[in-house]
Length: 273
Image (tube, rainbow, N blue to C red; front, side, top):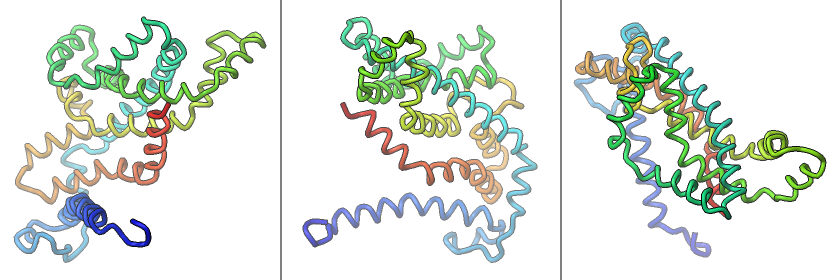
């Protein structure tokens, strides 16, 4: 709004952006419920009968629930590792940024955000194979490492907003640095924990490249890998494919819809100071 007049340029851009986002989602939903015969007609038309047959067939053909369990396991372990370790690393850096070593360490972590994954992909595959980490546990650990740069960036910004007087008072009362962090700082970081947990869960759940190059056992495939194998095997049956895609992305869509305010708010708090 400019004064009392609407800004039509911004409004039109927002409408177009919404259309480009919602149209693929609409097609995914409608095609997932259609039969192959209906695909020959109007692509944008609603299904004549809303049948769940495609979903049942996709579950059976892709061993969906096993892949779902693998994705849930990897995502949960990744989120737990990230919250427990990245916050601790960021706290140590934030409280010692006046020292050259910690300042170098901070910018070293931040620089990792600008390194494309394909550059480190081949060394990473060889290293994980040598260490026996080519499984879902190793995948969860690597996911946590991959998220370190961005999480340290927003955690450090948030820790700077916490008054040091709280820590000084706790130290006077006899607490050591370890106790200060876990009993005072870590609970105060709950808003940032929520943001980091949601962003990490989204990244771990939707990650395709890392599981593709790391996992060697097909029984440990996550949902993105199952979708890839499904597409290669049943590339002509779009109804089954889209039903499988919809089931795979539905949990994260629901989480993002209800949690987006924490994502935006947390990133803003972590980037200001």
